[in-house]
Every structure is written in C-alpha cells, then in structure tokens.
Amino acid sequence: MLPPQRIAGRERRAFQWRNSSPWTTCVRVACCSRLRFMWFTLMFLTVLCVALQMLGVVRQARSAKVLKLVSEQLVRMPAEIHRPIKRKDWENLWSVSAAVAEEPVDQHPFIQRRDESENPRSEERREQVLEDTRKKLTSTKKAAPPIEANKLWLGQEFPNQPQRPAFPKRTPEMKKPPHSDDNNDKYRVKSQADNTVMCQPKKHIVFLKTHKTASSTILNILYRYGESHNLTFALPLNMHSQLFYPAFFAAHFVEGVRTRSVKEFHVLCNHMRFSSQEVRKVMPKDAFYFSILRNPVAMMESLFVYYKAIPAFRAVKSLEEFLIQGGRSYNASVPNNHYARNILTFDFGLDNTAPENDTELDRRSAEVIAAMERDFPLILISEYFDESLVLLKHALCWSLDDVSSFRLNSRSERSRRPLSAEIADRVKEWNSLDWRLYQHFNATFWKRIDSTLGRTKLQQEVELLRAKRRNLEQMCLQEGGAVDPAQVQDSSLKPFQYGAAVIQGYNLRLELNNDTRQLCQRLITPELQYTSALYTKQFPQLAAARAAAAKKIAASRNTATHRAVKRNIETNVHTAMSNNTSHNNTNKAIVDEHSLHILANSVVHNERQNNFDAKKQYKEIKRNT
Image (cartoon, rainbow, N blue to C red; front, side, top):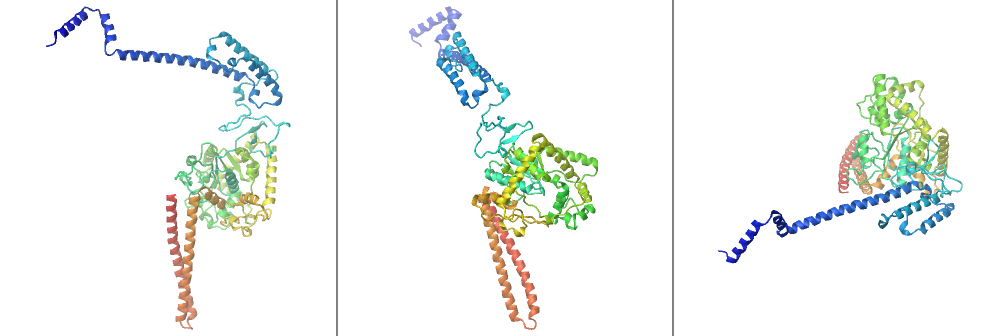
C-alpha cells in the first residue's frame, strides 16, 4: 500500500496530463526528460561544425584571391628581378625599393590584410602601387616573356632536372672560372642550332661489352671515371671477370644482389649476354645504355686468332681454310662455338643462327636492329674509335679528359693477317646478320654526328683528343707506346695472354711522382687486374676471404709437392743401394718412372682435397659475412 500523499500526487499529475494539449506535451518531454542534456549537446556541436565550415570557405576564398594576385604580378614582372643583379641596375632597383618603402607596411602589394579586404579604397591603392612598380622596373629594360615561354629562370639550379636551361653566351666582361677551358668543359655540349647548352654528367651507365671491338679500352674509361667519382660497379659474382658469359645475364650474377649489401649500382660494363629484363632489375631506370660494333671482316680475323682453341677453329689451320670449307667444322650446338658465327648478334642476346635465305635474312635483321635500337640509344663504331669517344663524351656530358685513353688488349702487328677481297666477301656471307647490323649502325652513327655536332666540330675535338693522348704517352710511357708482353717490366701490369694472339702492354716511366704514377697506372691497367682491384675496394671482406683461401691452397700445393719429391728421392736412394751395379741403370729408370707416377697421383689427390677444403671455408666465411 502506498501512502495517501503519493497516491494523491500521482492522480493529480495524471489529471493534468489528460487535460493538457499535444504541443505542451512535446515541450514538456523535450525540456524536462532525461534526454534533454544529450539533445542540447548535439545541437550545439552541429551549429559549431557548420560555423567552422563556413569560416574555412571564407578563408580559402581570401587565400585564393591573394595567390591569384601574386601569380599575376610574377608573370608580368621582368626576368631581370630573377637574374643576378648587375651594378648598372642598382639605381633603378634602389628607386623601386624606395618607392615601395614610402608606402605603409600594411599596403605592400604582395600582402593583403584581412581588415582591408572589405575596403575598396585599400584595393585601389594597392593596384596603384603595383602599377607604379611595374612602370619603374620596365623603364630601362624590356619585359621578358611569360614564365611559360621561359620554362625556367636563368641562374637557378634544379638538382632533379635532367638538363640545365640554356645560358647566354660568354662575353668578354664575364669572368671565367679558374682552370676553365672552352674546349674542355665538363658540362657543355653543342646542339644543332649552335647554342651552348648545359647538362648534367650521366652516372648511371650500362655498357654492353662486345668481343674484339676495342671494348676493353672503353671499359678502362668507365672504370677510371667511376673510381674517381666514387661510383658503384655491378661486378661479377665471386671476383669473376665476366658475368657468367655465355649464359644469359641474370640479376643474381652481380655481387651484392642476393645479399642486398649494395643499395644502388651506377655502372654495369663487364662481359655478358644481354638480357634487358634482367639488367633493369639491377640498374636504375634512368641508366644510359650504349655499346660498340666492329666490321665483321676484321673482327672475324681477330676472333680466329684469339679463340683458335674452340672446336670450330681447332681442326683448321687458317681462317681461309675454314671459310673455303664452308664452316664444315662448325656446329652451333657445341659449347664455345658461338664465337665462330654472328658473335655480335649473340652478345646482344639475340638468335645468331644463320638465315636460310635472303627473305629470312631481311626479316630477322630488321627484328634484330629494332630490338637493339629499342634498348641502346647509342652504338659506337670501332673503326672510328676517336670519333666514337667524342660522341660518347657528348652523350654522357663528360670532358675530353674523361675519355682520354690508351689502347688496351690490343694485338701486336706481327700477329695480324690481312684478308683478301674474296675472303672478306666470304666473311660477310658467313656472318650475314652481323654484317647487316654493322651497315645499319655505321650509317646511323654518322647521321647522329651530322645532326648533333657536325663534321667540322667533330674533327676539331678529335684533334684535341689525339693531342691529349700524345701528351699522356710522353708523360707516362717509357717507350712512348705499347710493347710485347715479354718486355713488360711490372708483372702486375702484364696483360692476359690467350690463344695465338700476342697482347701488348705498357711500361711506365721511373721518375714519375705518386699522383702522376697513379694516373698513368690506371690508364694502362689491364681488364682483369682492374676488375679485381675494384672488387677488393667494394667488397673488402669477401676479397680478404678469397685471398686467405688462395693462400691456403698455394701452401697446401707446395707442401704436397715437397713431400712427394722427398718420398721420390728416398725411394730412388733405397732402390739404388739394393740393386746390383750391372742393373743399376735399368732399375733406376723403372723406379724413376714409378716414383713420378706416384708423385703425380699424390699431388693431384692433395690438390683436390685442399681445393675442396678451401672452397668450403670460403663459402662459410661468405655466408657469415
């Protein structure tokens, strides 16, 4: 039972509820229920959000108006205010700055205050100041074209820009930087319109090193430039000299790719069979690709001498005999026989099998040329090597000093044999794909020169390059030129000899100072030694592990040889003492033959075992590194 007071209060409220109007009921619920606090809160937040959005729209409109005003003034103002100010312009600029200084700070033409945005007089005053400023700036100078026409202001530098804007030609009153040379400027090239254009030197480079095309000399140029500019080379794995040629190039052939120890590679230039897709996994997207070709006739003669031991050339005595027989000893399926036919096409990663007829030759040569032009914007020609270096200098935006070089991996004249016209025609027919490539890119080579440098400018730079080479020869070389390998005094600079070719080397002068000797030694360092030195510089831990393994192998070989020789001597002495004098000579010969056989078996067994242990140790060290 409820108390009588509570029953009376409830009845009174019920009576008032039944007799009240619907509107009164809604107001009472909205204002007096428990949800009234939440309802008022939501309403307040809604009003606040709407107010903030409206304020943002107003501020954005004002900012857009200010930016539009500033952009209009920048377009109309002359380019002189963006250039370095000359002395004769100081008076005009001083008068302009004084005129602007006379105005209140709040009325500067590039600043719009909020409290003045609604004032029409302030807007008129600002327009008047801007007009006076333009008149004073253009009183003595002619207005420059809009920014869209100039593209970039003169005098500015943009690190990420691939090519610098055009600069005005030098005048006598302009000062030259120290040690400047108009003919040897690292950042200057000349266009078809004979305008001086500034450019950035290229440091991401892919050079397809082809066989017997003077490519070792270009490799030395790239090695020297990369070493002097601290560039990172994509070197072969395990200190090899080639990127596992003749297999197609793969990204993991490069040292540091699998282990990800190298973040960026700059130069890829060792021997490989080109694979565009795999190369782009290693090199940056902006890498510059180029290669070099040689006349297949002269190249075939060099290949025959250098690779005389391959199965295709082994059975014949001369190149003439090989061609007259129609390449009877050639079998494309035999390893290393790719050197004997269309080697250039093979190096570019394309099919080097001979076409069956002229129709197939036309089709396949067109496909090969299209593939090469797609991947390589520049193809050099070995027969015009100096002209090629000048063209390469402009393509890479380098200097003549950067491309100055000596001939490396070159044969002596006594190992060269001239070919008759008949044999030359047979070579062209045998290497029909390579001959088509050479004809096409030889023509495009000269077209590129005519469209960029011109023959006159090319000849001038070629003469300068040859003069620099003569100066380097007089400064560095002892005999003034190349010598046969037997006459090379420093064994570390002796070139690798292969086949029947006689590869020449160089001797340095003895009175050179340290800096000059270092420069000259880089110029004459053979390919294998330079590659090994760069590998040691980039991967010192791996190089040290390989050196330790090599020392262990050499020591084990010496120990095994010494023990075998000692055992052989003891056996001979014992046999000689036990045999009769009459049979001494016969028995000694038999024992000598037997002991030599034992010696050979022992040395081979020990060498195999030590090689296995050393390789296992090297792999363990490399895995830990």
